[in-house]
Structures are given as structure tokens and as C-alpha cells.
Image 1: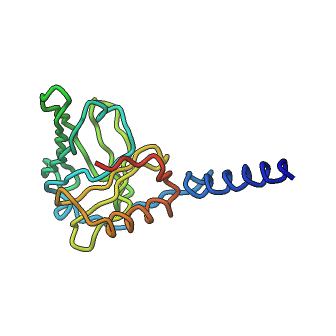
Image 2: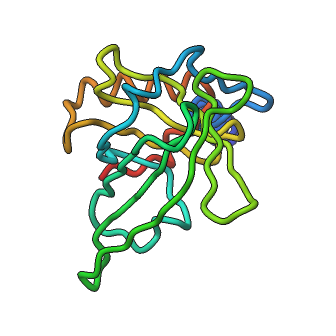
Image 3: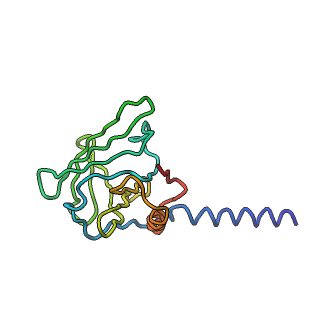
Amino acid sequence: MNRVLLVGGAWSLCLLSSLTRAAPGQTVSAVPSLELSRYIGTWHEIARFPNKVERKCVGSPVVLLAPGDKSDRFQIVTSCQTSDGIPDAKNADGKIDKSGGGKLKITYTRPFAKKYWVLAVGGAYDWALVGDPNHKSLWVLSRTSKVSSELLYEIEKRAAAQGFDMAKLVIN
């Protein structure tokens, strides 16, 4: 009898775990249209998957996007406070991928570019969900430094629907 409960409990944990992890082969979809002029500006990081670029950050990073030298290009500055009190800033160049929509290519070190996709954006461009097509990176961004728990929950549902593992999400 105990063995049946143990096996049943293990099976339940596996099922629960599969609901929060990326489904094998699940595709990620970028927004079909991104108005770069509305996307440009100041964004506050609300949540993210842990990543090497922000490992020293102790506060919520701020992401600044400025127009680039061409209509499909932009500049990025990501800054945050570190544990020793010294601000940490990273610069990057961005451009909209040739395939269009919310598919972006970001370059921190030339000639290497990373793919980041805008997966969802608020109707007033007041929040954005950004990730990569391999389910390894994810950010929840907002024009304000805080969002309601209801809005964050709705954004998390959108990410989970595209196969992102919400157990990895770190809320700032």
C-alpha cells in the first residue's frame, strides 16, 4: 500500500513539474508587429530569469532604449546597483531582425549577436515580456518600477503558455 502511494506521489510530482517547465519543442512567438518608436524609452525590470550579465545586480535594473542611426536600430543601456554600491552599466546595439515583428538582435560584443524576442507588450506599451527562442532568457519590463500582482500574474501566464519555466522567474 505504501509503495502505491509513493509511486502515485512521484507520478503527481512529475506531472506538476511538467506543467511549469518548457515543453520539448514548444515554439516561442514574437509579437507580429512592434512599433519601435513606442518601444524606445525607459523600462524597469520587474522580473527575470537569472543570467550572467546581471549576476552582480542587487537592485532592479533599468533599461534605457534610444533610437539608433537607422529606423530599425536602437541603443541599449542596462544599469543596476551592485552589492558594493557601485553602479554597473552595460551598453549594447540592437536592431529589428530582417524577418520583422518583435524579433530583435542585440550585440554586446561585436560581431556576436543574441536573439531576443518581444513576446508580448501592453496595449499602451506600458509593459513588455521579452525572452529568447530557446527558453533560456526571460524578462518582465514595465514603464513603472512596480506592477500590480494581477498584471504580473497575467504576464507570467503568457510566458508559461509559450513554454517558459516560471519556477526560474526571479521577482525584483
